[in-house]
Structures are given as C-alpha cells and as structure tokens.
Image (cartoon, rainbow over all chains, first blue to last red; front, side):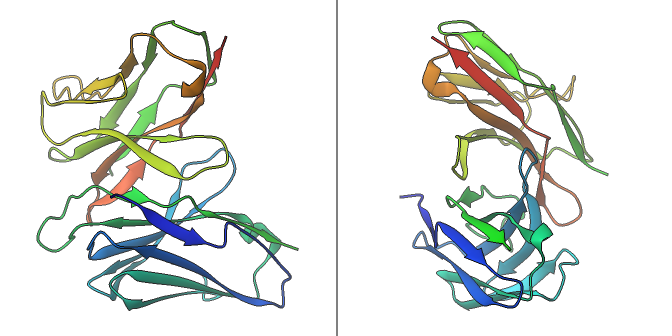
Length: 116
Length: 112
C-alpha cells in the first residue's frame, strides 16, 4: 500500500481565518513533505520532516506553520493567508532520508486551497 | 545547481500513437531519476524510476532509460490511450539535500 491521504480535499478560507491541512501515511515512512503547486507549474518544496523533526524549511512565510505530531501524521496550520497563497497543497512521504539520502516520494491527492 | 529540462507542451496525439517526452538533466554525481504523472484535479503519482545508469524503469506500458552519456531520461510509450491524458513531470533527486527537482511538466492530450 503506497497511499498518502490528505484532508480536506477542498478548502475555502478568508484572510483572517485559521485552518489546518492534514496528511496521513501508514507505510512506516520516516520522512514527510509539504509542497505547494500553482496552476500549470511543478510542485515547490515547502517543508521536510525527517524522524518527526523539521529538517528543511524552504524560506516559507510564518503564516504557514507545519507540525508533525507523530511519524504517521503531518499537519499544516494556516493563518492570515493571502489570496496569492491559493494553490494545491501536496503532501508526500518517503522511507528514510537518514539511512538513504535518495528515496522515492509518494504523494497524496492534495488539498485545493482558495483564499478569499 | 541541479536542474531538469523537459520538452515544452502541450503534446497532442491520436489514440495508439507513439509517445516520446524528452527529459534531460544537469546534476553532480548520478542522481535517481523519476517520472511522475498528474491526472486532472489530482495529486502526483509515481510512474517509474531509475536509480543508476542504464537502468530502465517501466510501468503501465511506459518506459524510460537512464542515459548517463546523454544525461537524459526520455519517457516513451508505444501506443497511447485517451486515459493517458495528463501532465507528466520528470524529476531528479539531487541538490545538496537530496530533494526532488522537477521539470516544468509536459501536458499530454490524447484524442480518440
């Protein structure tokens, strides 16, 4: 089973709202990722967690706050977003970034976010 | 730095036509190479991968061979179907932290 699940599928929020995106995997993977994808563009890496610790933050604004409560779950907390943050947010996971620097990433279906 | 270059789309083919989507890369060392596919309104799915030179990845009739001498990883399929209509991303795992580096994507439309 190579499934990564994401909820919600769609989210509409105002600029003053606080919301969270959720990602879950049960493959025993120890690395999890958040990507942002704008229309007709490739995904852009936002954050990487390895063994539940934040290992990469690609200079993402603080209005995006990731959290990894356990090895299966990854959240992205959203606060005071801007309309230009509207995009497809993709979660991915991979086996182990410590023992094997290169590893296959498996993506979830994404959350389509619209900021009004 | 490491980079991936894909042929510009969109690519429009008739059903049962032969497909080639070109992908070349620039990298230090020998990174793993991937093709991901994104169907309309969905996330990315791993299509195939190759981890070393001369490896051939294959899945669902698609193939790509890791060519070190030409730094290429072209995607091919002998007979496309309407259901293959999607955006295809070539990617390598590279850079200083082994992250995925994507090409810009190639949109494929297959007409019946």
